Each structure stands twice: as structure tokens, then as C-alpha cells.
Image (cartoon, rainbow, N blue to C red; front, side, top):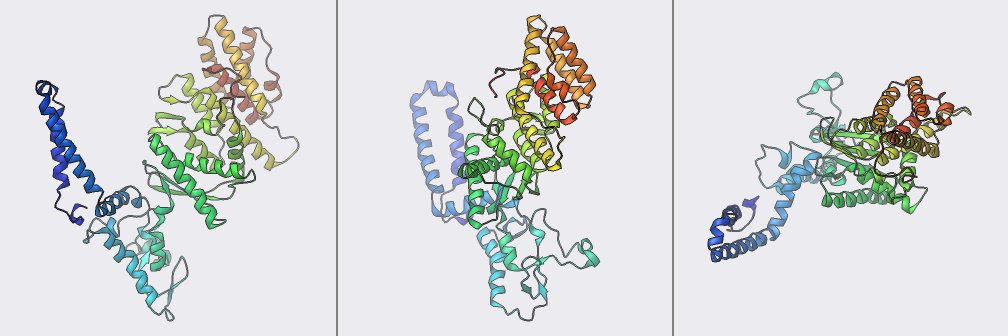
Amino acid sequence: VIKFLNTDFDVANEVKECNKLIRTLKKKNELVKSRNEAVRILKELTSKFIQIIDYFETPQAKKYFPAKTLSYIVINNAWNGVSFLNPQAKNLDFYDDFQSYFVEPVKKYLAEDHSKDKYICSTCQRPMKKLEYSYGFLNGMGYDLNRKTSNAWNFSNDLYICPICQLMYSVVSAGFTYNMSSQGIFINDNSSIIQLKESNNQMLESMTSDLAKNSHASPYRAFASAFKNELAKSEKYTMANVQVITYDDSKYSFKIIPAIASEVLKYAANKNWKNGSTMLTSLYSTGIQGFRGENYYSIFSAVINQLMNNTDLTNLIYTMELLKVTKTQGCRYSTFNIMSLICMNARLINEISKLKGGSNIMEVNEDKLHKMRGCGVGIREGYASKANENKAQTLAYRMLEALRSNNIEQFMDLLLNAYLYLDKIVPSVFISSQTDQKVFKQYGYAFVAGLIGEEFDSEESK
């Protein structure tokens, strides 16, 4: 970049000189002996810093440095290997590179007569004189059509595009919202251009705000924030059947938001807890460090991802409770957060049940979930009164194993023994819900959440 700036100021050398002066400042013993020397160094540093700042404030520096940075942290998420992202590119000015590779072919195309062209663009159906450009430069969207002819039927590729479409695809990364962990998201809310821009601009604002506060800015959190903002404008708003494209681990995933997932998210965004958060926002900062091969496993991202796939959250709830019972390090969530998941999962199960229809389908009752959690708290407190606090943790672990293996009979045996030991009456909810395994398990996990116990009382989450 430096060679594109018309200046004799050697910024690289000046930065090195500053580093040397800073190292001198850190030698405390020498500075104690000579205060005047310290002042001299500070004055020299100040002068150099002002020059460096002025250097980066010049129009040329503002033109090239940010662009070069963006090319390696944003643009290359969408495409690579061509133009200024081609390692063997001869033209070092990336503005000129982009112009010659993407823009000039469009100008040439528009100036030509295409009345006798025999090929058509596979995207827009425009006529083309020859097969020259393809999706191959896009990450995860194509392959080199000239080198891998065997990938096409009968060795005849038809995935060629015109220069105009190639130019349009080159700005894919401008539409996505990316964080600093090479994750991105785009809501294809294409009922109108205005709605499309509004949805994605809201995600950009949310992501920017999160990045300013911490390094775990999640694209899914930005998505939820955009969804919540739209709900605030209209309760009838829904993202059902809207396409969401996510980017993670160098791969793009295309998903259509199911109507059920939209309903669950709507419910979670509007459900307020007594501590001021909603069911959805209470999960924003939840995660597990060093889990499943990830430095930080975001529970919120996992929840949104599973909802988009119409997958219930039972396995995630089990894992979270198990990690709490075994006192695993790095768990950044409470049983309050677990209850949020249990309630969302209950809503998901009920919505799926409605689709199946029938008058005999049993639903999970949210009030009963909180009561079962309260019952779990009661058992834990009962054990504590008998100076047997560890018994609650042991019971919780054994109940979790019974729920994981769908062994209702074993869970009931453990439950009966616990209530007999404390001379209490078994909750009728467990008796009446045994005919529906899924419903029974939700009450079971709520009960275990109470057994695990934490810093808030049984009424806080209601």
C-alpha cells in the first residue's frame, strides 16, 4: 500500500523508531535517574505520533489502507483467487485490478451487438458471444469450468455467466453482515427492496454495537435483534419462509425460516422475565468455553440454528444441565437460562403438535413447567435441611440419565424415592403426563433445573 502514496514520509521506519523509544521508556531504572531524559523521549514520541496520525489522515492513505484491510477480512469471505485477491496478480493497484477484471468487461459487453450470440447467461439469460465467465470465483458456489469439465453432465458445462452478473456477484460481501470471527449473515427478506435493506441494516447496526463491546458478536444475535425491532413496529410481522444465508467456518448455508421457528422466536422475543430481560435476550451472552472443539460455543447461536432446522432443543437442554451437575468449568449460563430454553422448546413442541392435529394431543403447559422447577427446588431444600446437600446433585445426574435414555419408569422410581424420603406428595403432573414421552421429558428437565439450583428463587423466572 505504501508505494501508492505520494509522500517521502517513511511510516514503517517511523513506527520502528517509536517502538525503540517506547522500550527505552519502559526501562524504569534509567528514567528514575534522569527525569529530563524521560521528558525528552516523551516529547519526541509525541512529535512522531502526530506525524504518523497526519500520514494516515491523508486522502491517499484513507483510500488504500482501509480498502486493503477490507479485502482480507470481508471481501475474501465472498470470493477469492481473482483480480486483486489473486496471489499472482501483476497489477499491484487493487483499484485498477478490480476495474480491469470486473468493470471493463461490462463496458465492452454493453457496447457490443448481441443479436447473433448463441450462448445465454445461466443467471439472467442475457445473450453471450462466448463462454468466458463462471461462478467459480465465488467461495463455495462453483468450480473452475475449464479445468474440471468432468463435473458437468456429458462434459458440457452450462454454468457460465455474463460480465454484468459477474460484476454483481463481486459485491456479494457488501450485502452480508460479518463479525471478526469470519461469520456472516444475510436476510433475504425480499418482499421489497426497502424491507431487504432495512432488515440487513438493522443487523449491521446490532453487529457493530456488539463488536464495540466484545469479541463474541454473533450473527444470530444480530438476526434476533433485527427480528425484535420489526416486531416492535408490528405484532403481525413474521419471518416465516424468509431465506436466511449464513456464513461460518468458510461455508455458506441457505435456510428458509420455518413458520414454527418464526412463531417460537416471536414468543421468546415478547416473553418478559421479572429481571427485565426477555426469554430471547436472556440467552444472548450464554456460552461454553472450550466446548465441542470451539474456543467459545455460543448457546444462543446453537438455539437459533436448531430452530431454523425445526430441531427441538432437548439434547441441548440435557447437555447444559449435565455440565452444570458435573460442575464443568467454562459454563457461562445459569439455570435461569436453562429455563428459557425449556420454555422455548415447550412452545416448539406445542406448535409441531398443532400441525399434526387431533384432539388427544397433549401440550406442555408453561405454568406447570415453572411449578415443576419449584418442586425441584423444594426437594433440594429438603435434602439441605437434612444436611444432605450432595444428594440433590446425585439425584439430578441420575434423573438426567433416565431422561436421556427415555426411561420414564426409572425417572419415576427416582422421583418416588425422593418424595418418600422427605415425606412429601409426588406432583400430579408427572403422573398425568406419562403417556406422552416428549411432554413428560420437558417437565422432567424443569424439575432437574430446580434440583441443580442457583442464585435466584423459584419465582424470578415467572
